[in-house]
Image 1 (tube, rainbow, N blue to C red):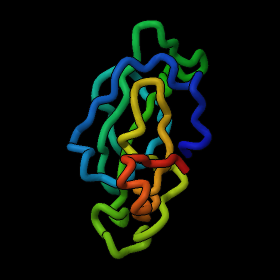
Image 2: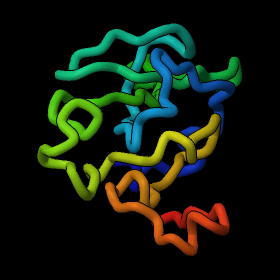
Image 3: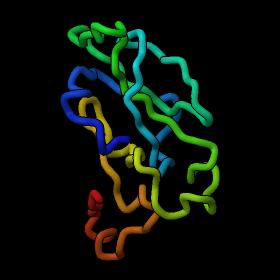
Image 4: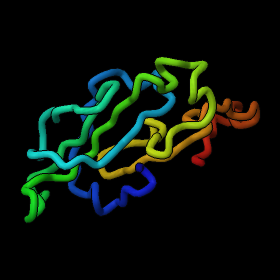
Length: 133
């Protein structure tokens, strides 16, 4: 879950690679996966699709036990809001979901009114303000 990701776990990220345009997505799911390499597109073994992934710098250390690196992977499932706007997540978002506009290398991101499926108030829109949840 994204709320369980800590800043020190993503401190070696150098860039985020997006496999599709994230501007139209209200939220994406993120997880820390154990991967064999610091960079490159990882294999994907979930339903749905991979939206992006993190690249680690050369100082990132592999786990002594497994020889793998913990890297963020960003993904969506077939029943997420982008595919089923009137479905399960018409409002609300999964626990591991964040607004993709709040992400960056070494920045874990957070939920916003948009990611939760609720429109911002008129006053907030007029001021150009979005609040994290």
